[in-house]
Image (cartoon, rainbow over all chains, first blue to last red; front, side, top):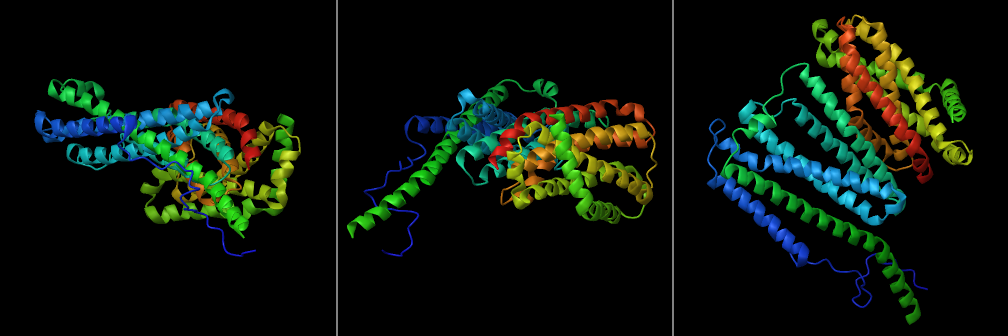
Length: 263
Length: 222
């Protein structure tokens, strides 16, 4: 009997059973990707060159077309992740799909939360004179960011699929329940000190009109499409990883047995 | 369920009484944190006294992590966790017992820390009722979240780093509300602490309920 180490990554072409990843811009998913990317490019072009500068904010207003859509996608992603976790915990709808969807959506959400914080910070520096102010929305978003980084860290802990999925789903709900408490406590905390700052949707409405409104709408639509596209791909990747974990070992065993049979 | 909770809490507290880890390590750790805050902010009492409520609660939060880790460290030796699962005790009772034991230890620690901030930072301890009420409600919330995430993290190889990352962001509202309630009490306006006490109570009830429901399946997974 040979004592050589068993290769954990068999590459023999005959036994290769894993579906190979398709290029990211092919098929129906690819069409979605094209639409999303075209929308983002169009938003950037309209936002930078077509729309007029704002009466008060000047060119700074151009961040309006990307920053709120990013924030919307972040909240949407966390909402989807929480719903998927809930559906995973519900015995009747418990399938691995919901676990993967929760993970994929939360990961995209964390990316967009990070982008929201960065773009908000860049906007805040010239308008408020500071990279950061302790505004309720900003503070809540920053806490959300670390909250879901913790959730992703929990997901990455290796273990049996079902154990990991249930643990992650409960973790996601513990985090989700916290969001309204965080928000209201932060709002009350700030309201005792000063009036709400610039991020006030009612005042913003008054100076968004015409081409600006259309660009903002396009921004929301294309970032939402971008979210769907990225999440779908992250989901596919998670599925492939799971396949690799299970099938990869099977392939290795099969190769090892074939080696023995050949003797 | 409550009888099981009393059994588990009694067991945990008895182990603490005998091993004195909380007394000999967590207590001194909290005092060290208070001293370090003093060094960081400087000796000026005009700076320290207004900050004492926040510093007190940050010290409590950090100590809670140690208390939770300790609470699950005693279950990891000699397969005590399997014993707990085999014992036939109600999982909700186990959760309430462990959370109760952690809360009891934290309350003792908070009493010591209160003396600490009065002595070291020169905080005037007004509004004792609000101080005690916010300690009680805040500690229950901290113990509930800590026990919940403690069982999630226990048995994992990365538990020491994972628990603080999971725990601290979730209890941010406790830090905020408890600090505000203490600030109002210390400033001599305990009547304005009402809504903060409500947040603390809602938080405690919410996470105690999640814990009693979810603890069983998390304990089985370990």
